[in-house]
Structure formats: structure tokens, C-alpha cells
Image (cartoon, rainbow, N blue to C red; front, side, top):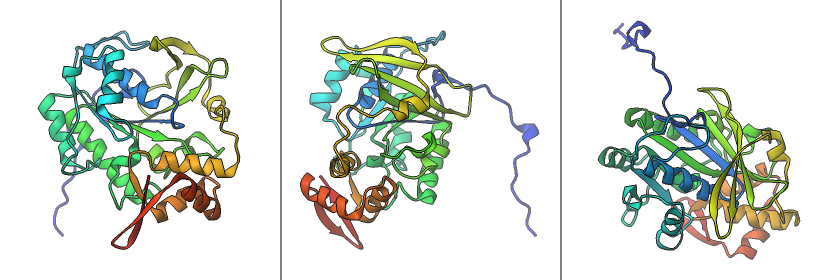
Length: 317
């Protein structure tokens, strides 16, 4: 029998965790940020990116890293009218912000261009927003085997480069435990070492609450608040005592309009900036308690377009 190539742990040097934003976003691995659509997930990810470009301190972090480049892939918002103006408002050094050009070929999380861009620009942070836009056609968010494979490869890439990867995703409409509240397979939660949740404050609709829902590398960090008031924009407010259960139990203002309205909102979130296979959408909807009949009505109301590609029907906005 041939010898098996093994690694002896006596020859492996133990290493302390390095942090981009301690203890929320570690370097050299993947973090997921989850929240409802339209509440500021993209703004939060851009605020963190802006701090990285300037070497600015993040809440609670004693160590301040030197300025570094970042890579931002945002499939929901136009670069010229949304992403860059927000970064300018946040005081980012835009000369340190890069976007992988998807004109000729759409980017996926398995794309070799991500690692090449990190190496080229010595980037410390990569943001992919939203997650479902970068899985690639044929990769179902609802199937554990495909999700875990692509996230494992992404983790290995992050470890090789030392960069932090922040994936922005949506919450589903369920009422279960935190690990089951992300849209798609629970393996999205299980596959990464750190998961953050974003919600709206009960006390002020202009205040957002970021709660640390999972950490494999350190103790959970304190919940943090920030404001999104006009005209001042984004501003960190400090720690608060909101728990993950409290955050996820809150009902988003204006979200209580019945199953059809929930289904329409669900489709807007799933298809924002991307397309998806119809069979996967029906499976995700079922997980969220939305019937096939209600989903079809919502599809008609939201103007979803349908195109056949090979053996699949593809839905898009």
C-alpha cells in the first residue's frame, strides 16, 4: 500500500489570530454579515473598508493597523452613484479602493481573480455584497455540499493571502435560532468562524445595532450601535446590551403586511443584483414559510423575468 502524505503537528507552528476588527473580523479567514435588506449592511461594510484605507481606529480596537488597500464587489449598488459617494462621505482614501472588472466575465467566490487582485494590491480586506450574487450559476445557497465547498476554498484563499473576507448576506423570514436565520443553507453559518448580525434599534429608527452571533476564534464581542442620520451619515455610537435573541426577535418597521408582501420582499432580496435558478428560489421560499402559490403571485407583482438556460429556468429582476 502506498504511503499517505500526512502533516505531523509537531512541525506546525502555533499562531495567534490576527485581526482586522477585533474580535469581529479576523484576518486570513471569512466573516459573514447578515441582516434584512435596506437597513445598512452595505453602509457598514463600506465604513469598515474606509477605516482600513485610512488606518483609522475601529471601535474597541487598541491596535491601529497602517492604511491598506481594499477590494469591494457590490452587485446591488452602482459604483458611480452609490458606492463611491458613500465612500467619500465616509472619508475613505479611494485611491486604495479597487473593484475587479466584471464586464467580460462575472465574478464568483471561486474566481482566481480574487486572489490575484489581493496579491497585486496587497489588499487587507475583500467585501462581496451580496453573497448570493457571487456564488455562481449552479451553486445553490440551499445545498450544503455546494456551499461548504465554495466557502472552504475561499477560506483557504484567505489564509494564503492573509486578507479578511467579508460576505454580506440576507436574513430569512423565519423565527428560529440565529444559525438558521441566514438566507440559504445553515452551512453558510457553520463554515465560517465569525458571523455578525445587523438590525434596527427599538429606540430610534436611525440607529443600527451590530451583534456578534458567532466566534470560533475569541469570545463574542460586545454589541455595537451606529447611526445613519442625515446629513451626518455614518457614526459609531459605542457598545449596547442588545443580545442576538433580542435583535432577531424584533420586527422591522413596516414589515408586517402579510404573506404576499413578505414574498415580494423576499424576491427583491434574493434577486437584488443577481439572478437565481427557479428551483432554488422555491426551496428558499419554502424554508421561509412562503408557499409556491404565494411566490408565483409575488413573482408577477414584482416583474420577475424568466429565461431558460440549459436545464434551468433563471429568474431575475
